[in-house]
Amino acid sequence: NTDEDLKPNLRSQRVLNQKRIPSITRYILDNPNSYIFSAITASVDGDVKFVSAEKKSNFGNLWISAEAKVLINDGQHRKKAIEEALNENSDLQNETISVVIFVDKGLKRSQQMFADLNRHAIRPSTSIAKLYDHRDPIAEIIRRVVYETEVFKGVVEMERSTISERSSKLFPFSGIYSASKNLIDLEKNKKIDQQVNTVSLFWETIGENMDQWRGV
Image (cartoon, rainbow, N blue to C red; front, side, top):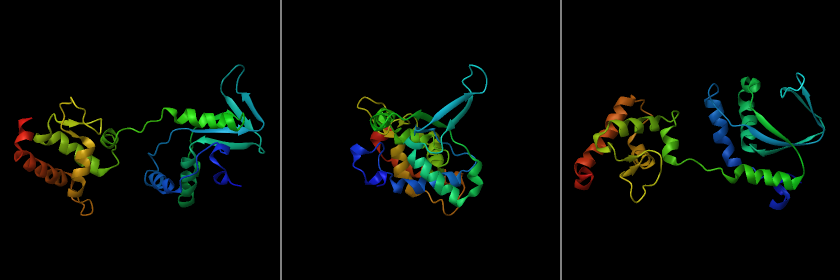
């Protein structure tokens, strides 16, 4: 049986979601010189030996038996995407990724490691994720629109994707992104300045015709 065939309580990891792989693979292939991944976490069930480079040094070589079983506790989708990317671009074969290795202590421990690694994992809000995404040309345009358009001055929540009850803000950055992206035509290769002007004019016109917005 493969790991996917086993019941959840007999596995140490969730089933691989194949739908996630293409986007991660494309991310690597599109950004071969600047992609970034966090470390993969793995458990090793087998003979493991650490040989220190110097006496009492924490640096050295880790020897793992060829018969040892290696289980990925965190990073199975990254691993699969890397394999797919290598199939398309063999130049990536000399790339490296850090790996945190634990000596395996059985299924129960591996399941607990998975739970602990994901216990405090929280996805960032869409607003701040888009704000910080410099690979997304639409995000670049919206950043400029928010900073340069008069009606947005002081009323945009840049970090959160919802507006709290007592907030002085009117719109989350992610909301402006979603509402504006259909105004942007990247296919025509228009200059960024032209796209910014188009979106800014749209929102300035709406703002000028809404008394409540101007009142803020």
